[in-house]
Amino acid sequence: LTQGLTKGLYGDSFSANAYGATWPWDGSTGIVKPSDRGNIGVWQDTPENNLQTMRAAMHIAGCDQVGAIELTDRVKQRIFDANTTVFEDIAQPLYKDGIYHVPSKCRWILTFAALQNRD
Image: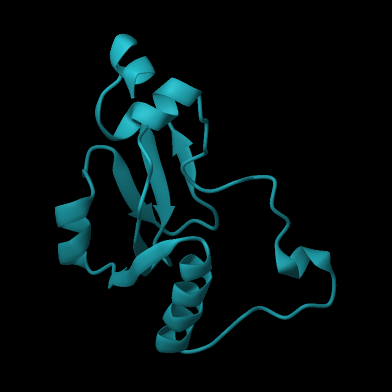
């Protein structure tokens, strides 16, 4: 924490600024999709079972609170800035000219809380 304070790094971006983390906003590009590994089918189940699976996986990673929010029009208006985020019919998300382009097929947001050591 002292290192971050001496550099003038405060708030939620402390770790990213202090340690130089560069994570792409749309996920890691170094991970191979299961469907690209060969004859593996796409995972399809009910939203309830998918959430239960994600809760179990996130629990292993140290998250004790995991949930999901459905992206209705009202939720989109309240969470996302209309000037920087656009939902449209595209195959893959992209960031261009300061605007996040999100596929309209994205219907859920996974939420989680993880205890972090800020020392």
